[in-house]
Amino acid sequence: MGWVKATDTTGLAAGKTKKVMVEGIEILFANVSGKYYAIANKCPHMGGSLSEGTMENGIITCPRHGSKFDVKTGKNVGNAKLLFLKIKVKDDRSFRVKVEGKTIFVELE
Image (cartoon, rainbow, N blue to C red; front, side, top):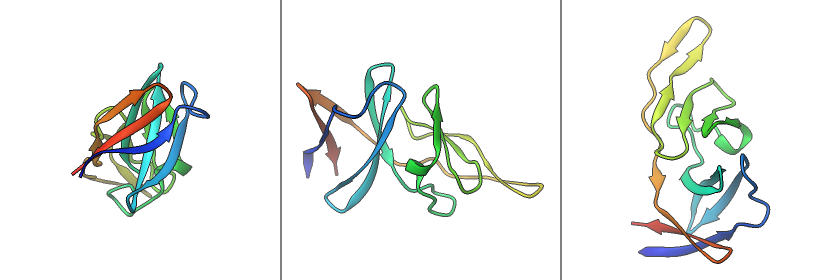
């Protein structure tokens, strides 16, 4: 499919995230220190919407069970917690991003 226009940089200040539907895929865009990144908006654990979570220093926390993902890579950096159990969670899907002017493009396969 290649590069697809996804959104623009407006409203996506440093430290903020934005959920966007691109070609039927929910993608979470994040601005970390002026650089833009994109991962799937659904937590691989139980499908929690990551856009409803919190981001700190480029790490997004799922609001459902606390799984943590690096928005730069999609890598799991903190497993889910359910009561006293820690549950192993897979990495999230990440997407390549490029910015031209104020337009953000995402590469889809």
